[in-house]
Image 1 (cartoon, helix red, strand yellow):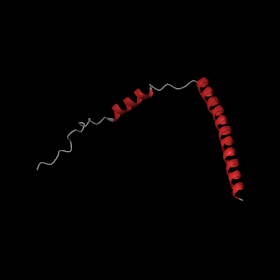
Image 2 (cartoon, helix red, strand yellow):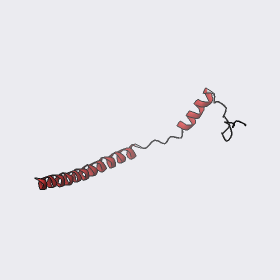
Image 3 (cartoon, one colour):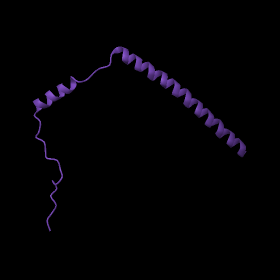
Image 4 (cartoon, rainbow, N blue to C red):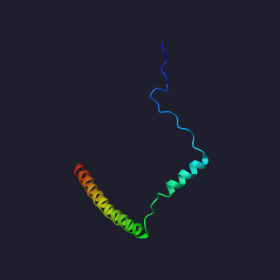
Length: 78
C-alpha cells in the first residue's frame, strides 16, 4: 500500500520575504491608509453619542416593562 503524500493538493511554499522587502511592503500598505478628517470624526462621535442615548432609553423602557410584568406575576401568586 502506498502512503498518501501530505503535500497533495497543498499550495506550494512561497519563498521567505527578506526584512527589507517586508518593510517596503509595510510602508506601501501604510501609504494606502486614508485617515478621516476632523469633521468626519466629530460627526461620527456625535452620531454614536445620540445612538447610545436612544438605545439606553429604549433598554430602560424594556427593563421597566419586564420589571413591572414580573412584579405583577409575583403579586398574583401571593
